[in-house]
Amino acid sequence: MGTGRAGSVESVSVKEGDSVTLNSNLTEMKDAGVINWRFENTLIAEINVTADRITVYDDFLDGRFRDRLKLDNQTGSLTITDITIEHVGLYERNINFRYTEIFLAVFARLPVPVISRVCSSLSSSSSSSSSSSSCSLVCSAVNVSHVTLSWYKGNRLLSSISASNLNISLSLPLDVEYQDENTYSCVINNPVINQTQHLNITQLCHTCSDSVHCCGPTEAVIRLVLSALVGVATVVLVVYDIKSRRAEHQAHIHTSGSIEI
Image (cartoon, rainbow, N blue to C red; front, side):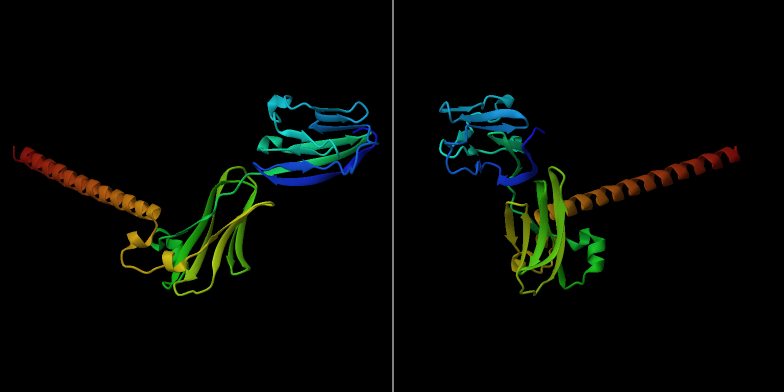
């Protein structure tokens, strides 16, 4: 880094699709001379106060800034509109050779987490660890990154799981009593966004004799597929047993006939 460059880096976080303004921290520019902005060492905008000239270089860097850059002609602040993940990185502000670095973090919009019931018959470990009076649930979110998924009972955190990898799926289990009247919610969040799904115990944890209707549609399909596979396997075993017995019987007859001769 050159002389006069700051040792510390400012940090700014923004949601994907929003706009962000990187401030010059000037109230007026009459003594500024030249203000320029760089992204990853590439010049993207410049104000020459002496020449009364404003220039944006939004076609550089494969056009990722095209029609997105706006310079304030009063303060020299830089606004970037319609932010995407491509705009994540290190920006540098230079005012008369006084440098400031700003790291821009962009977070994708988050899906609302999904709460579903888990069939106890499909999870032997879950059914053995929980009593028959409890309802097993799971909160999940797919294709997320740099987020935390949490269960809350009222305002109290019960459990959480975090992910830093890109585009993965998260799930977090919870067991509640059928007659529980507390308020539960599942929250997914990153530093700038959060999405909340509230649990409706009455709707998800009703008791019924038909496990297919008790469980969600995905669990019901799994149950049907497993039942079909078990049925097919049973038929195969029966057919194999019949063929084996028949072959054994024919071999016995053949052997007996040979001895008599």
